[in-house]
Image 1: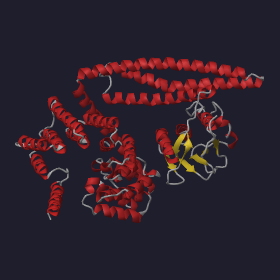
Image 2: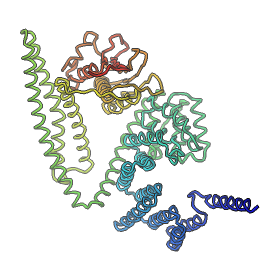
Image 3: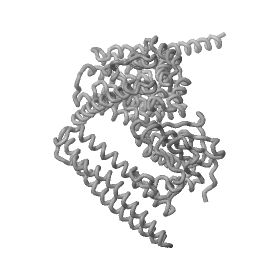
Image 4: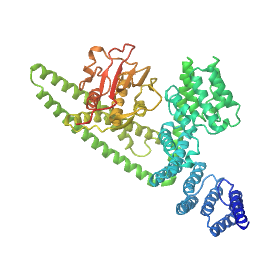
Length: 638
């Protein structure tokens, strides 16, 4: 009887303990009551006393989570005291950072990892509310780097999500895409229970937004978003994105269902405050009604929706309306970007001081000028080496007078072509660098940023030309190596498209058409595969002024091979030139930029991998179709 009574008392005590911790923080109910009192007094008189009571009781009973929550509340209270202040001082910001470091230190010492990253969360919100976007971005970047260094998936996950939100808030989906990919990778590979309890629907929806609405990746990621739903907001967010896609695909029934679902939900504003207005415009396009005026003031809150409306208008044959919307969108984005850059510059000046900033700009200008001189000398040296190389090449081919003449002509064309190709971006780099070196006040800051952008673009163009030459040289010297590892068919194709998209001419669409949705892994050199695909896509971009460029994959076109094909609607290649275009320095159109080495390099790399690159001469639908077939089981390297 006594033993039974003892067991009953222990069971009752255990049940009481579980009930006592029935709160979001999983702490003793006595601590939770003290915590709620402190939270209620955040930013008010009496907070310090209430929060100190929580700390004393937590230390007394040795509860590390409750002790850490004291520091969480102290940081939250410090930011609450300043929430209504328009401009905070440097001393106030430093005090906030001191409290943040205290919380990070205590969370690390007591093993409460979640609160280590909550410190960053609280302070980034404080910076964002006060319009300090540069500070916010720096803080979140630091959080992500800390998590990577500490190898903590939760911190990497949260850091990526914060960066995604910040970039999307600025309508910068290009920058956000990198962090969306990383967050998806962490979610799909981690076994962290805190992360797994979250839903990935929003990530997949955001990922679909980084592609043009007609891209095949949009329905792929929306299907993943639908499958990942865990709560009501997931379904609402999915239907919001599905409605836009259905309208673009002219699936009126599916569009009406998704639209009505969204409009009937009182939480729609949490997904998009401008969604009702957007659906109003889409309705008029779907049902063939006129759109006389477009409310940019309202729709400017969500520029991605404006882009969708323009795409849908074009799909329904309303090209003039689509052009008008796109034109206004570009003008608006330029104004917003200029204002945002001005705001960021003002924040940087306040952070560094005007004198320090001016000195740094001057130093960077001089450094850029020195770099440009070095680039010029390097280019001259490379051209001399190329000339000597071509002369040597011509002498070795001197078996007949005709071969000598042809080699000399090839050398002359190549040197002339290279001189022109190199001089074009080089002149732009030197010219805009000289403009940047003029005394302060010669140009507004926004024009200087535009000059800097031109320098970056032309430097990339110059780098691409030099890479072609260096790759050809590496092939000749035998220093080019193929390294085999696992490669995934879809990933390599999508990565190549991402790298080549910026070379598209206006109005041309580029997309990937996979042979199957499931991933397919095989042994290859992923870096070399992507290099060949990028070269083929870039070549298509040069020769396609309108229409589309399609990268497709197939496992059946050449059995035992993964076959990629790049099909464009460009100028095409005469069948009799099908092999000539793979010769070095061969160019069918001297007015198109390039060294004439790209296709030759593709074939050389493919040959080293046991692969094949060729022009499909049976293709007659307009434009050209290049084929790249890679063995699924390559022969061992000798």
